[in-house]
Length: 193
Image (cartoon, rainbow, N blue to C red; front, side):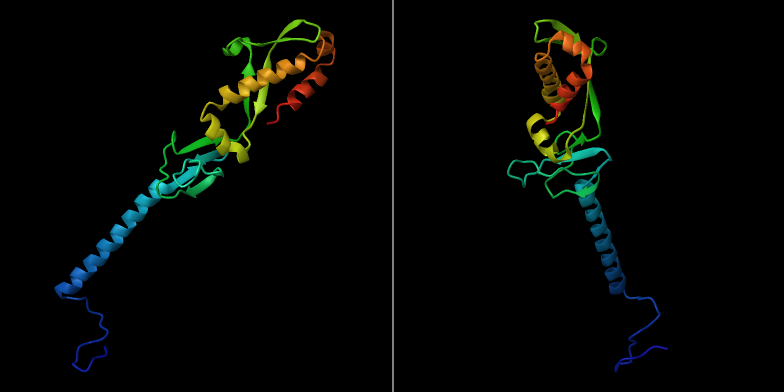
C-alpha cells in the first residue's frame, strides 16, 4: 500500500526508479562516494606512518621553524600534516630507542682496534671496551638535527674513547689493575649525556 499525493503520484513506493534521471542520479552518487574513498585512501597513504616498537620517528616538517618537530613520534600509527611526506631517509627517520652496544676491540675492525691510554704514572695501557647505550626519546629530534644518521661515529665513539682515556689518566696502573671495579664505575658514571 502506498500513499498518494493530490495528483495521484505515490510518495512511498517499493518499485525501482525507472526514469533515466533517477538512474543517472544514483550513478552520480556512486561515483562521488567512490571518488571520496579514493581521495581519502590516497591522503591516508601519504600521511599515515607506523613507527615500530623500539623506534622513534623524527619528522622533518615545513611547518616548524627549525624544520623538525620538537617531539619525536613514539611507537604506533601517526598522521602527518600535508606537506610532511613520508620518506625514510628524509622525512621520518627511525631512531632505535632500544639498547645498543659499541665495541672497541681488535676483532671488530675499529680504527685502532683498542683504546690506548696513559695512566697517572705514565704507563701506556691498551684495553678492550664495550659500551651499552640507548637513545633518550626526549632528545631524538635534537640528535637527528645535529648528527643525522652519524650519531654513533660522531657522538658515541669519540665520547667513549675520551671519557675512558680521561678517567684512566687519573689512576696509576697499579690501582687500575687492583681496583678495576672502582675504575669501571667511574668510567661508566661519566657516560650519561
